[in-house]
Length: 126
Image 1 (spheres, rainbow, N blue to C red):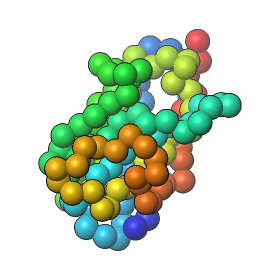
Image 2: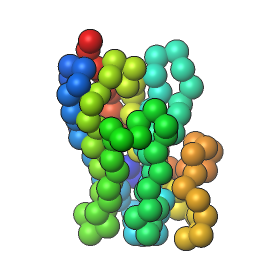
Image 3: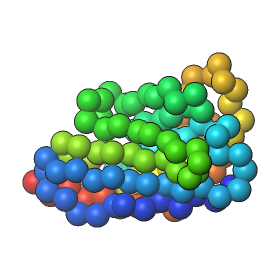
Image 4: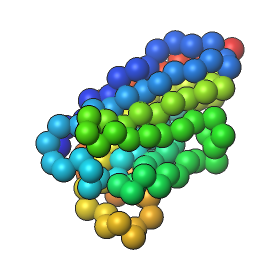
């Protein structure tokens, strides 16, 4: 499985960005997909995830501002980020969990995800 993330950039506080991640290989519809981020000087952290049944989960810090969606036909997962804040500045990574079953919760631990994209940088200016 290979993941390619895109959509990062520079935006002013309050603005929006949409990140996309395209997968190749494997059966995308069976994956749990997640977005993580690594802020400067911080550890990688969970941002949002979407299960194969389209159930979603979000970190408290982004609830109400970010949404996540998947398109199984295009093998794509998007992260729509609205109301961006300077503290959202980070490198964002998409990740695939290919082994969790349907009744498993969306993993928020990066160790659950076997495959990772290359990261896309988001900078939010104040």
